[in-house]
Length: 595
Image (cartoon, rainbow, N blue to C red; front, side):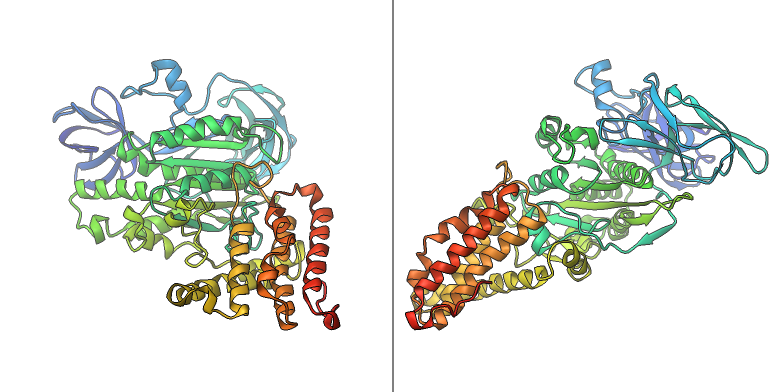
C-alpha cells in the first residue's frame, strides 16, 4: 500500500507525490474524506489521479492512499434490478443511508453482504472443473437464473459443495487445484473493469436481433453480437429508440448505461422500466435489467468509468450463456469526459480538443461486444450486442466522436430531426442509414421468415430512393408533370413511409411487430405497387387507383393484432386484387394475377 500527498488539484484531476510504489489504474483514496479515484498516469513518484467525486475544498498536503487494486466491479447475485452509479455504488442503498444527495467519500458495497440466496449445485463432489464451468445456480429473479461459475485461473477437483442459503461472501464450494492448493469459491467474484473477460472463441454474428421495430428489422437489421450507433441531434428520439430496444429486443439481459445524460431522462427510465411488462415473461422489465445512472450533474470523471462498468457486467452475464443487450446513452458525453481529463493532463489535443486516442478508446469499448463461445467445458454460447447513442453538437455527424464511431460500428441508424418534428417515429432516415449485416443475415431471415424477404426489402429501398429523386422534379415542375408510373412510385413510397415505417411506440399493438407480421405487412404494402403497375399497363386510371376503398384498410393493417394477421391480411389482399381487376378494361380482366 503506497501513501503520498497532494501537490496539485485541478477539477477532477489530483496530482500526488510519493506514490512510487503505486501502479497505473490502481484505485486510491484521496484526502481525509476518502474520495475514490484512479491513477491514470505516473511520472516518477508523481501520480495523476482522476477522482470520481467532487474535489472542491481539497488542497496540497492532504494524504492519498493507494489500495493496490485496479478499479473492479463485484459480480454475483443482486445485480439484476439494481441501480448503480458509474463506479457501481448502489444508488438506492445510498439514498436509504444518507438521503437524496450523495455525500463525498461514502463507501457502500455494490452487492448486499447480508442477503441470503438459495444456492443449488449442478456439479458434485469429485467432479473436475475448469474456469468458466457452472457449478451451481441461484434464482435471482423470477426470470433470471444466476449461474455461479468457476473463477478465471481456478482449475481442479471439487472437494466440497453443498446446497443451502448463503450470502455472496460465504463459501459454497471448495476446489482442490492440481498443486494441492484449496480454493474457496464464493458466489461473488471481482473483475477489473478495463480488462475484457476472456472467452474461448469469437463467432461471426449470423443471427438477427429481433427488435420488433419495422424500420430496423426490415431495412437496417442488427445481428446478435453486433454493434450499432444511433446518432442524432437534440429531440430526434435517441433515448426513445433505446428505450424501445431495451423493452422489445430479443435479449435475455438488458444493461442500460445512462452516461452523462440529463437527470430527467434517467428519471423516466427509473420510473418507466419497473412499470413496463416484459412481453417475453409477463413480469416487470426490471427483473432482467441492470441500470447504471451517471447523469450530467454527477462528477465528470465517473462517466468515463461508467461505460466500462456496464460492459464488464454485460460480459459476466454473457459468460453464463445469455444474450445481453447493452445500451450506452450516450458515448458523446463519455468522450467529453475524456476530453476534459486530457485537457487537465495538458496532453496535445486532437481534432476539436478531443484526445488523439479517442478512436482507439472507442474501439476498445465496442470490441468487447460480440458473439462468443465462453470458457468452460460445456461450450456455451453468449453474446453482447452494443448500441451506443451519439449526441453530436447541432446534429453534425462530421464531428470526431460520430466519425470515430462510424469507423467501428456495422450499423448506423441516423436520426433525423425533421422526421421527428413531423411525428414520424422512429425518426431513422432511410436515405442516410445503413447496415453491413444485411447480406449475412439474409440467409437466416430466408430460413426463419420467408424466402422472398430480401427481394421485398430491396424493392422497398429502391422505391424510397426513387421517391427522393422524383421529389426534386416535383419541386421544380409539380406532380402533374410526372407520368402515371412515376406518380405510382411516389404513392407507393408514401405508403411504405406512412403505413409501414411509421410506428407508434405508445400503441398496444403497433409498438412491437413480429417478423412474420412485418413480412405480411410489407408484402401487402408493396402488393398495391405491383398490382397497380400491371393495372396501369392495362389502361387503368391513376386517380381511380389512388381512390380505391381498400387503401384505407391497408393503412390500418399495422394495427391488426398478431393473432388475426392471417385472416385479416388474406381478406385485404383479396379485396385489393378484386378492386384492381375492376379498374382494368373488360377484355383484359384476369390479367392482374394475385401476388
